[in-house]
Length: 132
Length: 132
DNA sequence: CGGAATCCATGTCGATACTG
DNA sequence: CAGTATCGACATGGATTCCG
Image (tube, rainbow over the protein chains, first blue to last red):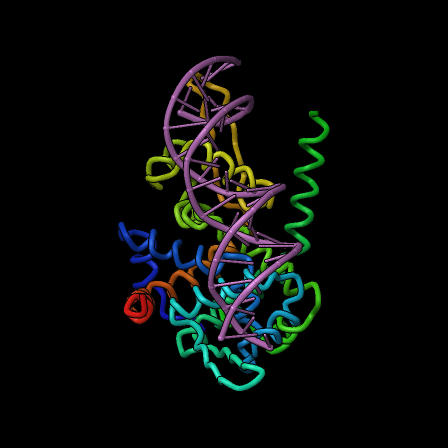
């Protein structure tokens, strides 16, 4: 990665609307399931129930909603094959693929800092519990 | 940036718990205000109402909760100066600073793709509206 | 199989009022 | 100034049922 960042940096940090839009975009992928879907679709296309199975804890409803929103944002394509039984395939679009990169960066950050965060939380909880 | 990624890539993509933890972490910063705070604190420390003013649309309550959670996660430090009037300063910790990097990458992605996403949404809405 | 629709529990958030 | 407390509106998300 390593986007030449000084120019965009200033923009992201200062523009009136940019901050809003950026955090909207982040809010969009922060919806608990979108990231999972991106990670799974990153390698290859998946069918509906295939996604459902691999994700594990998701309800049918939420997967449908998640995929709908992602489709609306242009992140995934939805391909219906009207056979019996019907078949619906989801794949990442170019935008979706390009989003997978920053997500991976964030994922790597999270992966590297899991323990430090857990420790910080434990310390904080200990600190505040003793007061109670 | 550009973390050597093949190793972590596999881990993030495949480990049973890793996916969960990662998306938890993303969910944490995806909470609508955390990113804003990080962007603002990235340059320098801020006081409570200073943050409130610069962020703009946030309620007192949400800023308090956001900062609390970030403090718990070890992302910010909270420094109380018991004067009159009281003064509380917030700064990013090392972890917080390191998180600012991936966030910036994501922000740059969002910044570059704002138009494409808006276009995709408009197209999608047009497509579905005409059916109704 | 893939989804839509309904119902219901919980969580999130803002406005307001009060405290040190 | 920097919170805390309480309330009610609203969104989110799960379980279930029905449909093509």
